[in-house]
Image (tube, rainbow, N blue to C red):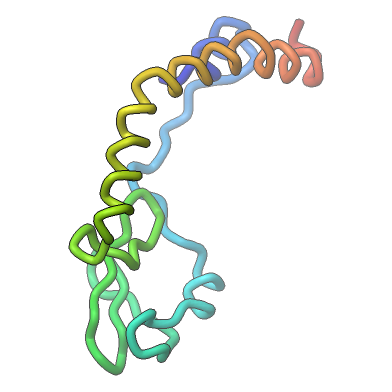
Length: 115
């Protein structure tokens, strides 16, 4: 559970709810997407992803986000940037959670009157 969830749970203002593991993109958004390879669309649902009706390219959906770019298509510079961001997440994520718990959660609890 995230820091926000823990803080709101402690305040007693929010009940625990189940969250789907992999949310689906909104249907109306799917009508706007086209294949990045041949620019045709709309893409069609195909199992756990989307597929191009013309070239049959497949694009997986991970955590509700369509992935149009595979790791093999990244340049060396993009691979380095990706690695650097992964390394930063070790210190950035806990810092952001601390900020959220210290500043945003108390403000949200005050706004909903759960003090």
